Figure (cartoon, rainbow, N blue to C red):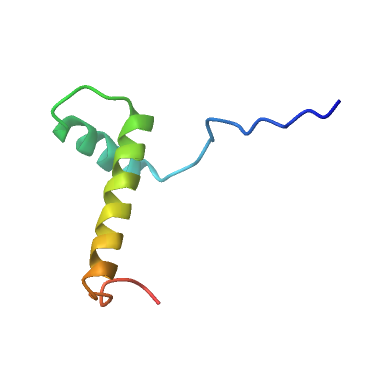
Length: 65
């Protein structure tokens, strides 16, 4: 019988205190109460949309090479 290994849902990461404080500031700007992990997910999705939009529009000046 084969068992699939389950991937971890959560990952521990380390960020500088200043970045964490900025993350908390962003969290307070969102009009609903969400957790830090939800804030990170939101920012990732927002970043992905922005990158895809810039690629679609041919604007690659801001994307590091």
